[in-house]
Image (cartoon, rainbow, N blue to C red):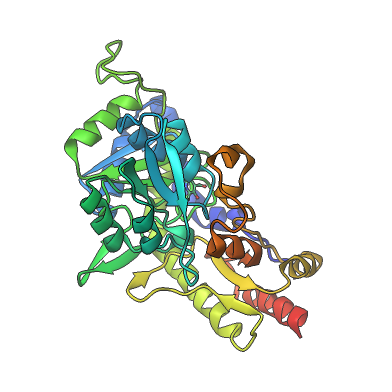
Length: 371
Ligand SMILES: Cc1ncc(COP(=O)(O)O)c(C=O)c1O
């Protein structure tokens, strides 16, 4: 049985009667730039994520870049982040004029290690940028303490974690809620995916929200008047309409992903060569990815490919080992937990529409390989 890593058409057939009229509405209105769905989605997303303001933008990358730009970083200013992430987390720090400082991760969740963050703080540290990897929140409460002690903001890269929650001081808090800003991506493969690129920043800081709203419109709230140099980074109205139509399904989709993840974890127990990542206590994971650590990964990949089972490695080359960051001076061995994870991880199909037969086919193929 073929099981693709992701099957967006399986989702589309279930919701097209809701999404297509939303798209038609935008076409009829001809308000393609900053039409009403954009503000509607901003309000809905801010509410979902526990923040006061939502600021739509062109991508998750810009949702990181625009807040970083407001920090007015100078050469040598440092932003501490993880190397075990999608490129944008580190690339945007560089593009905002700062230096990414990559620290190691925790072996059980592969999220950034607060102790490593604390050890990396210097007088040049200007922000902390944790990533809620694969849809599970990092230890945001510890990171907030470190940020507060140094007097710098926390930028939550929640691009993979929309709707994820973590218990902090006895209360459930959303990914993106507690930081100075939270950044989300609507890349089509995300739990809430558009029909193209899109992103959103949330914040409860009114001054920051106002500045971000200007920055995405070339730095001016009023047309042809520019307070600072910004860029064109609007959320497309058509994308906002698609996302608004999909949003009511998000919680059920993520719950389905959790169900599939629990099934995999249970079905793979007793295989010492396959170790699922841990869902940390007090965390509600949204399983943007379901990732396990395995032995003989290359051979397993070849086997899965032959069996028609989709899979992927996120991420084979951590950011501190990317050629573009060679001048930062990291070497093999600089971040041992990260480097080991990069050699061992593999992600399996986890989209909500997977059938029990498909899940079983994935498990059977893995079991067959390690028999
Ligand atoms: C952790 C992380 N940060 C940032 C991004 C950037 O988002 P986008 O692709 O929408 O620019 C992504 C998306 O893939 C991501 O996974």
